[in-house]
Length: 561
Image (cartoon, rainbow, N blue to C red; front, side, top):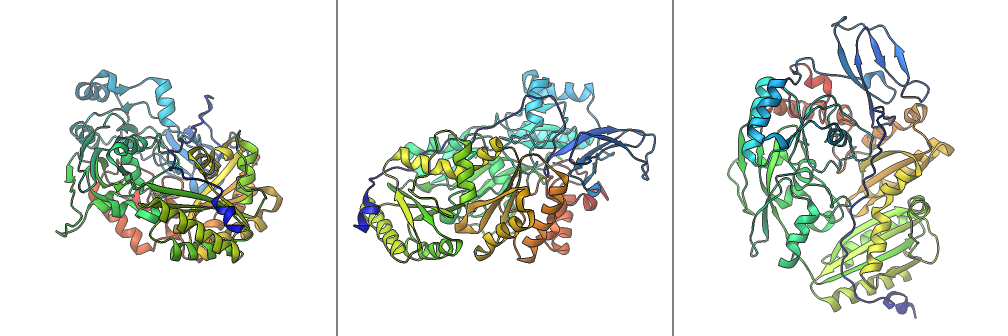
């Protein structure tokens, strides 16, 4: 009888999940009150824009002790900390008519964007938490044009922000001030595909979902799968070392990216576009550009190892009474489903309730509410073997009391509905109001302790929830609130970073540092390590024009930049 509980469903194919809904406000207000967001002001006569009493729109008068009094200064302010104020690098030039004329000569007028409406979109991140004030977006069509752009910008000391699909969560893909936006969206060609090795070579502007569509009839899949795949670019994925749902099976991009081409700040083109699995000739420099968020160079082409598309894909949605059961279930899954396990995701009851209350047409797949929910996906070449193996595993887990309820998807529509719950949490957060979002990597046994500790710390002030990629120790910690509040922010930060550091975790598992966490890098990296990173940055970008104010502590970069 128990077996029927797991065999009530039939076969299904892994669905192509919908991309996240990108909600952009049409307001013209350029002030964004958020832990991650910043407000901008053009300062003169010591006027600073700083938040007060939870209102980030209040202008206050201050007496400045710094130099350059009487000169116009530009700032960005984060949260409520005065230490978070960013000053525009005074060494950077500002755009003039000659610059725009030059770019039109090399790109053509239609690829030099000055239209305010298009710039509004490009200046704002998709979560509407970060907003720059760039007056120019450039759309190069190939590597040569990227090289010409950067060579010119370096000579003029014009700051640049590389941009792809603009789906980042830490402000890494939008300007902080008036940086020139270089969007690689027109560089979207598949250059080569080897059906024997599975190696795909493409330009950086290829949308991840389009690459998956290209590979499908050839019998291959991309080694990464993200909720934002309908908009994100492979160049941005590489530049942020994006993780996603399949990392437990296929590993990170440091393993699947075989080569890349990148353009450094001075316009030099680094051809590292190898397609070999093995190449042990000297330093493997491509790794410097994987995860460096465009701060060392702009990735223009990528060589990536794709995976065969296997015929048997199964998905189970399970309920667990506590986090200990989730941990034990993960251990059992690795031992008993090892060769076919392709995803192991979790979400807590707060996350489930948020989705049920804010997304239309969503329902809980299991019959009873529980404290935790697990999605287990298996992928293999033998349909009967994979199905029976998963059913046997689930029966055993049920008998051990690790699972209190569950269901195996019976068709593509049910599979899609399961994944929509997990991937729709961010959309539900947006609809619920304001929220603070953190991306942490921790030992699996510690992951939910920080959620419980933060709930105790915040009490009724916020709805704290946790979900993420349990299979690789990645927690997405979210705090849902009615409105952004500086007092609440003071309870959240630096507490979360200190807690993570104490337990030897990472303050950024897969989202990067961007502008949000650039100054917090020491919670995860030693001073000596950061100092070496700064040296590499200054070697490859001595004038500091590439994605300034991000990734590395501004105090260390600003000394020479």
